[in-house]
Structures are given as C-alpha cells and as structure tokens.
Length: 400
Image (cartoon, rainbow, N blue to C red):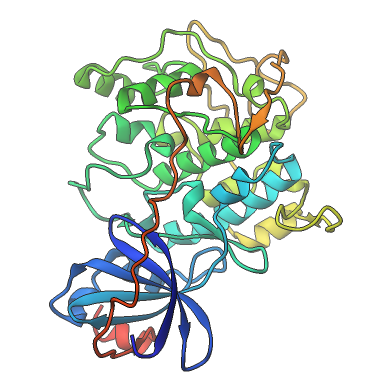
C-alpha cells in the first residue's frame, strides 16, 4: 500500500473493507477493497469472482476495476472512486421520482445489465445500495462479489441477493436460476423509485413470498407451473388471493411504466424480457431527466432509434404476459399499444413522506429499512510491501 494514502473507510461488508485512498503516483482518488479472505498466490486472486467478471465487463454503466494486487496474502481491488448510492439519493427525497427521472435511472441500469449478461455473468445482488453515481451523473452497477457465470451449475451460494429484491425462483429454491433474477430485481428497483419504499419488504422468506403475492396475485399452473409445484413441495404459503394492483400502489407511474414493471415482475423467469428487450419498451421513448442535475437541467430525450443503436438486439416482444389469477383479473388497456395490461384507475392518496421513506402499514413492525453495515475506523492497518499488477489484457490472457 506504499503507493496509496488511506483517507477514510467507506464500507465494511461480508467479503471486504472498502477504503477511499489517494494514488501517490498520479494523485488520483480511488476506492480500494481489501478482501477478508486470504490467497496463497496471485493466480488464485485472479479466480476471484469480482476479478473474473470485471476483467471481461467494460461498460460505462459498470464500475471500473483499475488494478489488482496481493499483499500479505490479502487481495486488494482498486476501483474508480464513485459517489453516493441510489439508495442514498432516494433517502434524500421527499417526493417520488417523476417518469422522466425513472426513465433516466432505468435507462442506466439496463445497459449495464445487458453487457453483464452478454459477457456471460449475472450479478445476483442488484439493489439500490449497489448502484453508484459517478461525479458526472452516470449510474454504475457495483459490487460483483456474488456474481456468477451464466454457464455455471448449482449448487450456488444459498443466501444470495438482498431479500427485498430476491426473485421468486430463489425464494422457492428452484434448482436452476439465471440472469432473469437480475431482471426481477430491476423491476423491484423501478417500483421503489415510484414509491420511495420497497415494494416487497418481507421480514422473512415466507413473508417475502406473501408480500409478492399481495401485489401480483398468486402464481397459477397457467402462469408459473414450476413455482406452484415448488411451493407445494417446500410448504410455502402463498397469498390469500387478494392483491393490490401496481397502478394503485404507484398512481404517479405512467401506463407504459406500469406495463414495463408487469413484464419485469413476471413470476415465470422465462417470460421476463432480457435487459436489451426492456430497453426497447415504449416506456423509454419519452424524455429523461438526470435526477442528480438541478431543476433547470435540460431533458435528454431517448428515442427508439438511439435505443436500438445502443443495444442492437431484438425489440421488445409485446406478447401479453398475464399476471391474473382466478380471483384477481387484470384488465387489458386498449389505448396502450404495448401488449401490456393496466388495472383499475382507483388510486389511494400518496402517503406523507417522512425521513426519506413513505409511511405504510406494509412496513409496520419491520423497523428501519436495511442500511449499509456500520462503518468502523480501520486506521492505517494494511502495511507491508506493495507489488502492483496493472489490469491489462496481456496479464490475464496468460492465465485465463
């Protein structure tokens, strides 16, 4: 660490401690993650999930890994220094995001997910706290500690993804899951932008599934046969048959936004759109506004042609994906040419916002929402000699 000056601890997680540092060679500020595990060789370090994934994934909406080095049997990852998380941005607000601002944020998330999935990985821990802003207002997907290769096979790590953003197939212990779990999490994040509170704030895995069914209704043999069978096998109790529509929960969301969220939050993972398909949804045809800019900022219009140029993939498949149950029909909207659905127009009054989160009976008794681990001063504890290894392709090509 002789090439770096430690400034302050940014976070202390399960896998490592992140510290803001200054590179003494070029005066650049960076974030360095010291992994808590020990590594016997540098080759072993290069097999670490974050290193393997971020070496291949290079995109403006994905955090940039600058260097890797091993010191005293510990692995150090040097990242570009990013600003606050999307979670912190939301906590500062007193009103939900507008459609234009949601469009900007989701228009940053999906390109990042698209490249992650195309490079053969899925993140497995998508949540607002793992989405970080750059100084120039670009939102980046961070923390690849739980990432897996799409081609990998179970058994996977049992506890993955923060519960509130966990896909139903994970909750019900499906033996095979894949990149659609990131799409589900993106749908939950999108809903949270409109609500300023988690849409599925389960206090346990059983309660998590109940919260999901209380919004989307129960899965059926027609909508998700695998899920019904898994629920019966594992003894999971579904909802009581009654549910609140997305439009009732988010009266400020446009019909196109509601339709996109319906697609993203499909019970059946095979029916969820890919990240590139999501970007071709009509929701992204309107103007977008960077929420980090001031009120006088100009709108950045995203046209369908720009979307196709950015993500050259199949357009969104507007096949009707139905979430209805026998007790809760979903009404089609003939005016919305997206092949989607909308529920009735009755909407509750938006509840008063307090301390960054909206009050709601659904959160009653759950206590404060999850926050990053408390920070503890680490001091200048790294020490030792430093051997830097630049993250260049020649180095990795000799090993992979």
